[in-house]
Length: 554
Figure 1 (spheres, one colour):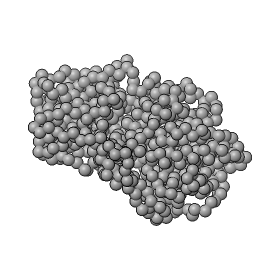
Figure 2 (figure 1 turned 90 degrees about the horizontal axis):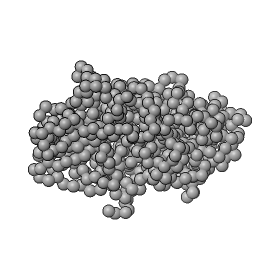
Figure 3 (figure 1 turned 135 degrees about the horizontal axis):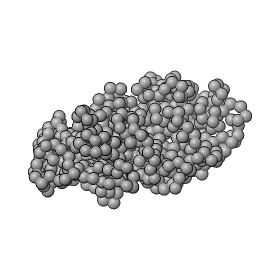
Figure 4 (figure 1 turned 180 degrees about the vertical axis):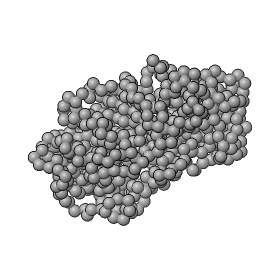
């Protein structure tokens, strides 16, 4: 496998012409006092190689803003000038939660400065008016973030402690910089961020993502120089190689106090990676909150902002804010939509999980705890069809954790297969129960999984019986005229069923959820290899089954 690669770059688009942001302020430094804030715009910060980036800094007005302030850093390439009190109405953010000074997916300076904090919004290298060329994560961006943290930590008004918080990109950068161990970085609050660039962002089960990646590439293209052509690099690197290794994270090296927030609702982007980050970081002071709600609403809900403040008061101000008494894990067991009770746990995954196989039976489209004796098959059109399998629970049932689908499959009319898997809850009347999905949607599935069958080879060192991890470093051809077993990771979720409610498994050759009515650009896959028919074999020697994480109901 080659150890080097040529990084594709794009010429930047004039930052002043972005039609989606407020007018771009000039590069000149400005000091503005308003709304109880001292706002310093376009402070120049020099990186270790001489490149200058520009940051915006907010502090409380008056003497309180001149000493002993911890800093919250919200590292984002989306434009520090792009601030607003609200987002799109379907996001569910309520009027009054944020001030007009709030950047996208970032903490609100008006709130945090009142609490005795400073807020820093940078434009990273190559973004907007900052110098240099923008790289989409990787060690270079981590080093730049390190340099800014160290600059902030020695400012005369700073108490020497810097924390990081924010959603999505603002979470992912925390996984990248923390292993570098900048001395002034004291606490992390990643709020939903993927941690595996290949498996969670660019290729789901080896199937290239064709919607969000393209949009993200252009969203990061506002620059006076050049920016990384992420979509072009994704197309040029369909297998894990040196390009993807350049973006790998050393999560085990993270030993700082960390408050991680994940959601069941962000399948196709952040759910898996946030939970994997919690599992892998080595800190003995880490806490996990998992919800099933809209991610932006959840970040800005006042009670959750209060949790953020507790956490940072504890580790940036040295106060006894009660964080050391928090449960290590708090998770929401969903019922429908975004509803469901929260429960405290000691660990993730839940230690008392009982992994139960439900066997597929192609004769009647059911799932059953007992394997069918008779071998059978079901076929569907690879482009338009699907196969479904149901089970109805005769008692209250909770499923919380990792799911795995083992299938025996065979293409008829093609030499490869792209498989898309969905789980849905079925109510007492036999209707599908909709759940909150991504950041804006109310009618999503319970869980999703994907696999290109030529990518079925497992990484045996990383796989577990309940979570297959695929190698994705080569393609293994399918044998002609014979079925092959595959193991498909279904991203974690949590759901409670009443007696008489059921679970439906759907397998098909296209996206399970594809109605993007808000043009948010969630995960889509249109570069497919499907033709002819897909054949699913069950029963007998073909032990096709869904492995579910059963939590004993007390």
